[in-house]
Length: 297
Image 1 (cartoon, rainbow, N blue to C red):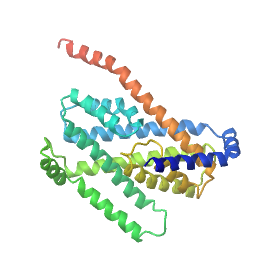
Image 2: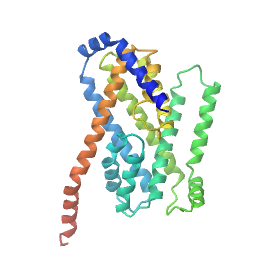
Image 3: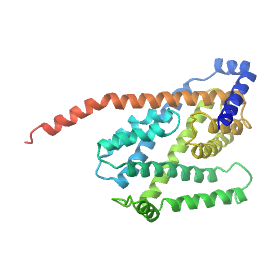
Image 4: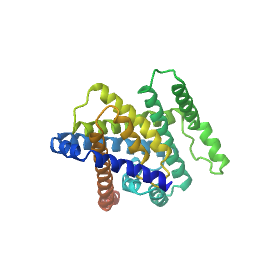
């Protein structure tokens, strides 16, 4: 495993060293206004992701307010930038425990979040299929995988699985609710791909065909990233896959620069959002308690 991630890192470093002069030229001539648009687009993606999390949690635990779920999502956002998923999910466990919600519910919701993202990426990959014509064996295989994944989040299957684990659901979500999770998750992938397109546009205008290719590569690399999400790395397979795929249509120099910028901007915004939520919590609780303490007329 160490050798795999070492190979990924050496490949990216080697590309950077090989194209050093061209990289400096692109940085000098860049149109940095697209950085602003990329940041705003990513913030929109974060807003959608927070809403999806709150929607999933409300399906299992409707007694907790929308704001409480959004607060937990935002406060633990920076933890997902740490190696592995232990800190991220562990932060959710800790915060929901204070709200009286069992770990099994949080673990199930976190799993459903990942499955919904996975299915959404599969469906979008089928729509943006970049290889050959639709109907090939690869396309058929992905379609079958998408159908099986949809079956995995069917309410009856969820209820049976939790009962088998002796953790019966307090509330069984509706089928339309689980489909809503998947539908909303497509927005995350589209906005994420749009963010990368805007970062590539910092260094070179993209044609419609190139944008379509980048979006397809984003979906495919995202699937690879989800399949390796539990591995101890925050920068690896997905980035290497994006570099290889997008470099067939665009210069490798700007692909490397855009991916580095993507990592820097998204990490900075994740940390900033978490800081804002955590620092504002005392004020929010004070205002809320004052409102409850006021006598009714």
